[in-house]
Image 1 (cartoon, rainbow, N blue to C red):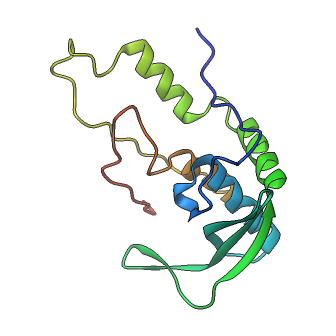
Image 2 (image 1 turned 90 degrees about the horizontal axis):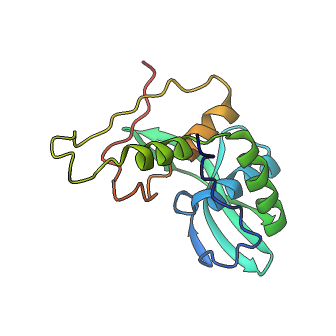
Length: 167
C-alpha cells in the first residue's frame, strides 16, 4: 500500500488574499478560526472573516452565531481578535498531526487506485453520499467539519448538499 498524499504545510501565508471569509480560507482559514476562538475564549464565539493587517498579523472578526431556519447568522455586535501568522502555521501543523490519515487522503487514494470517473465506467453512479455520526467532543466535531471545506476541489466533483441533523 502506498503512503497517502498529505498536503504540505506552508511556511508562509503570503499567498492568502488580504481579506476574505474564514469558510473560504481552506486549511489556513480553519486554523485562523481555531486560534482566534482559543484567544477569544468565549463559548459559542465563531470566526467568520479575516483581514491581513501586516505581513505577519491578521484581524479575525467573529461573534455568536444563531441558527435561523437552518441558516447560520451572526447577529448583534461582532468583535475582533488579532492572530499572528506564526500562531496560524503552528495550528496547521498541530491539526495535521491529529488527522492521520485524513479523510481526503483516503478519498484521494481510493480515487487514484480505482480510477473512478474513467470512461470505462459508463454505468458508474453519479453521486456519493457520506453520512458521519459526529464525535461528541467539540474539537473532534470541528476537525471533521473542517476536513470537508464546501469550496474545496474534489477532483471536479461539487458539493450538492450539506446538512447537520440530530438523527
